[in-house]
Amino acid sequence: MATSDQNKEACFYQAWMTLQEQELSELNQVIAQNTNECATNAELSQLIEKIMDNFQDYNHKRSLMARADVSPYFAPTWCTSLERSLLWIGGCRPSSYIRLIYALCGLEIESQLAEFLRGARIGNLGELSARQISMVDKLQGNTIGEERKLSSRLASLQEDVLDQPLAAIAVKSGCQCNIKVDEALDKHGSAMAGILEEADHLRLNTMREVVRILTPRQGVDFLAAGKKLRLCMQDWGKKRDLDHGRN
Image 1 (cartoon, rainbow, N blue to C red):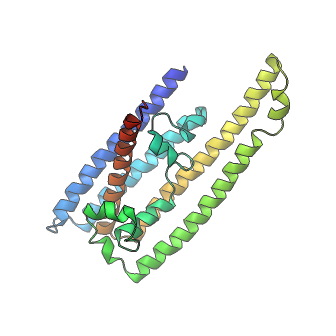
Image 2 (cartoon, rainbow, N blue to C red):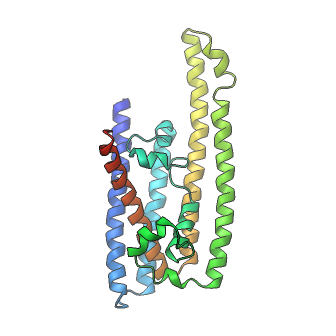
Image 3 (cartoon, rainbow, N blue to C red):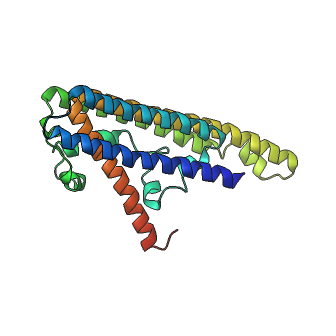
């Protein structure tokens, strides 16, 4: 049963990464068309909304799977060591979306991220208006505040798992104690699944706010750069695992 669950989770993740490749290809095609002003704002918005819907669907399905067994989503074996080292509550920090905008539009041009993404099309994102920059700044502050709240709640849950009744149960033995342990861990797992769901909700909402602030052309550039970075992170992680003899 455990092996079946692991295979299901790994296949679900791989299907998601395959979708990222497909979406990046679509975005790049639209960007190429947009060079000649072939793509309309309506077409760009339609593609962006499709990608947002896919993200929402992924979160929903992941939430259902995590309710059955949440622990693997905090240290997923289907990710590389590098990817796992960068996780925040089962995924990326929502505020990283905003840092990507800053890097792409040159507000953090000194960063290595900006250097790596220099090959991405940054023209539209380099034209952020003062109003857009103000909205992005406000979104960053709100997002970081929400991240801190969730991080604090997660820390409390991790501390509570060693408190009563687990601490008392651990020094005893017997079938009855094992039943109590399962009950306590199930309760803890349910709370962790709730935190994961809220973190995914924050990731989705932050992404939606970002593309709402940006113009359709800027949004396409932003999504393409983000998917390029995500896929590269996976490739870099695979290479480093091979270099260090990790399978």
